Image (tube, rainbow, N blue to C red; front, top):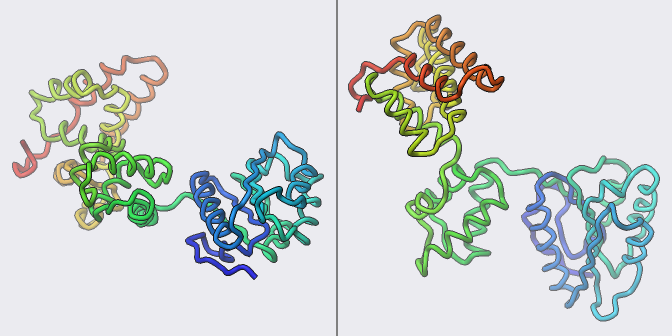
Length: 341
């Protein structure tokens, strides 16, 4: 009997060379591909050469795919049959065929059924007895960070420093395919260095949309009233930020000012609620200072002005650049010198 291999597959029965049918269900296509690669390596370790045959659900009939699983390979002693877009094929009329196959699968093949979504049912129970069912959901930020550390070391053969991994996930998001591509780029940019540090990520990986918004907010909040229009024109004309993004940044700022202003009047400490209010970057402290100074009713009026400006520009009733300039001039400015330029 083939020896089981350890895997970092999601919770459930372990992915191993003993699996004869595997369902990989979920929207994370990169994760499905990664797990299929792990399974292939396990099979090669147990059986030697492995033939890999790919099918797409919309292109081939179920009988042809299952016949491929039952037939003997010409050279290799084991066969890995991969069915992509399985939800296009495994429907009410064909599902019983796969259920019967899973009840008595071929010893000479491993069938991998991959799909974004595939209804659970009798097929899952049959597969669970001879293999495993894996849910491939996108990871959260913490899981993605741990994954980047392993991926850099195991696949790209370079260490990724802890703070560099944190920044990388902040900028790319928990997208494994995107993270893998950026790690590959950073490994080349490291040019023989032993590790990828935070400075390298800052230089080579573009800022996330959130970071761009925080930068816009910080520039506008700390600018003097006489400098506001100049600052916003520089953001749009020199930094090439679209007016729609700048208006969104101002609207987001107004929303946060209103929320924090209400929290302060309710006796809460806003500095302890930074995460709840999503107050990050250099704009966090100025927003809190403004919220201390402005009444919730005034903050709400400001927010409504921004929302209406956004609605009018998206409806073609107002010029986006003009709307940004008007909203910019309506913004309060923190009086605390510690948060002014």
